[in-house]
Amino acid sequence: MGYVFDFKDAEAYDRWACKSGNQQTIDLENRLMVEMLRPSYGDRLLDIGCGTGSSLLPFLGRGIQLTGVDPSPYMLDIAGKKFGNCVDLHRAPAENLPFDDNAFEYASLCLSLEFADDPKKALAEACRVAKDGIFIGILNKYSFKAFQRRMKGVFVHTIYNHARFFSIGEIRQLFFSLLGNAPVSWQTTCHFPGWNNQWIDRLEAPKFVKKSPFGAFAGILALPVPRFRTQPLELKVPAAKPVKANNRPVSCAEKTGKMGRT
Image (cartoon, rainbow, N blue to C red; front, side, top):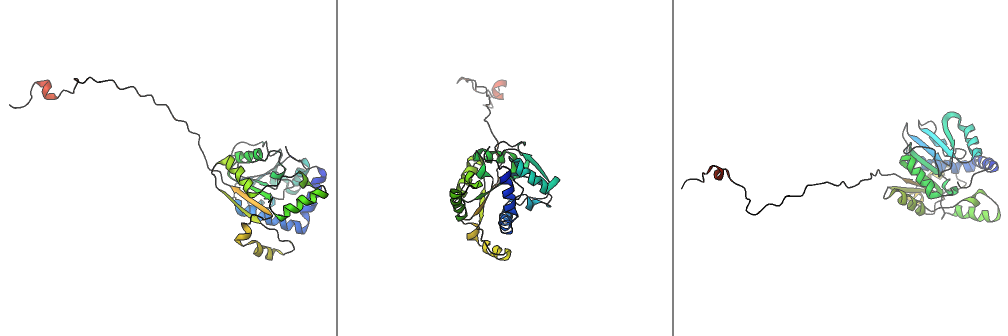
């Protein structure tokens, strides 16, 4: 188990998420996640490291069966007050999920892999319980925003002092090590501050923004390919009996003594 948010962390994050400017950032990240996952009505989705439930909000009212899991009881308490019975919430670490194999169509880890004690094991668990797709949302290690947060942590204690930042390439390599040659796609957002939603949509639309290796937030989606374990079967074939050279087939004429007209 990695870093677990305490009561103060949970309250501070919820206050941060409620501010209008920060809500705009969350909405932008959530839109990217929904656009890449595209779950259908009746699908089951697991949000790993759901926290207070910010990344579950865009899926409400879509007919999707939502489940959230988080190791922090304080974060789950806030999420429970928000969602009531709309989301099934569980307390558990990302590295040891209390669900059966292929229990969900999709799994997401949105800004939570950074706080896992064993990121590869957490990702392996997500691949185990989700059969159609796994979405990872990260604060891109090579973005200016991540650099700002790391520098702030030098002077002031923040939750990001406990975070491990990843690059897009590192997440892709983790997926390939677990899923083999499975399809993996990615997109980014650049978080243009101080703009209204209409301008943000225009600024985020170009392909070079969505595919920027320096984008502030990166979404990486893996689509597992079904694989089957095979084992060669041993076929026991009786050895051919040796045939003597003078044992040739006898024709019907030879058997009856009629070898034809002379």
